[in-house]
Length: 247
Image (cartoon, rainbow, N blue to C red; front, side, top):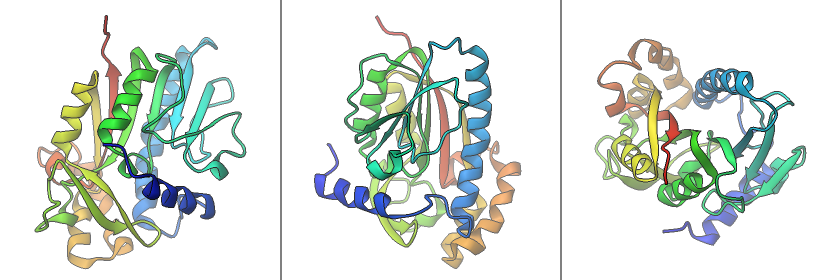
């Protein structure tokens, strides 16, 4: 089911009006950005090394940020037109309805506060259409597995619309780790690796309700992200996937 237009309009207004998407004083989301930056640094090096000038990146919800050098062709998609003012190839659109040709993208990116404002299934359907066979998808999702939701109906639910925090109180969707994995497979993506983060910090937030205090515990991600329990309790994950070839 597509996201209601009134909700999308509110999100568009919010992101058109805010200054920096990533506020350094917000330690919780600063840690999230660090995880994204580290993963994208690896991806960008691999992609740039193979790029002969013909490969294309589609960055959905780019927010005006770039992880690639100027040699890479990059289509920036964002629902908030103000975030695209400096873009070379801007497209103002929702992740649920991408006005792009099928199979145009060698690398599709959707990181930061994007997918949780959308229907995961609608967005993945679009990503599967625009991503070439054997192309790569990098997807960041905030999860209902988070200890933040322990004791609520949202905890580990396939999909739940929750009130949480991002530049004040915010409402958006969270999805379970298992549901994301199933939907990626259903839309033709094979997961190659996953980075889980905000593991112990999600428990700290459940107890303290202080994002900045809880973020101090995020350093433990380095130790616990490969631990068997991480997929069950992490607040967030970055999935690096390969588009499976189809006839």
